[in-house]
Length: 256
Image (tube, rainbow, N blue to C red; front, side, top):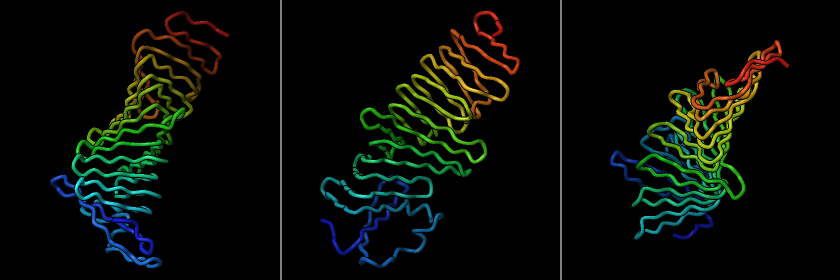
């Protein structure tokens, strides 16, 4: 189907229990706003799946592929995706999006996670999404906790697993939040336990309450917005309290 110049296309994405995906298009005359009941309400019924909008839509029926171009957006109660281009392959259950990709996850407790990348690949069957940046850039992830504050991450890739509610950051991951910065080769964030598992000689430094510190080791974990930090293997670093005393881990204590 070609682009309809006098109509704007609104698509309801409905996902049924069997896991199949159906797209139904409804053309609306320009200048009028007419949608099925409940579609634009924040709490519209989950059975509707979500709403897709774009400037252009085309279906390849024999291939089972749908293409969306220009100001593409998909919204449902749990997710929001924006991009310049998106492609849905119903046979494989894969969704590809590129160009200014913004993917946001809305958690039941009011927290949000926003990822920004150049392109993404999402598997509807596995509930996994992988994001890649543009050349010379990083994928950014901003997690807003309504009670604890904001964490920001930057990495070469991000893999989100909807079933386990985890984010895997690969390739020189950087994490910032609560006055503390972390550099790690790879990092795994578990949303349910609010814990980062850090691998590849991570280093954590910054200011916390009454002291400054910098610590490195073979691996580490940090939970509850850095309230708890644990290092393992070949640990070294320093800690400066309000009395200006540095504690050098792995060596001796000395004053400055």
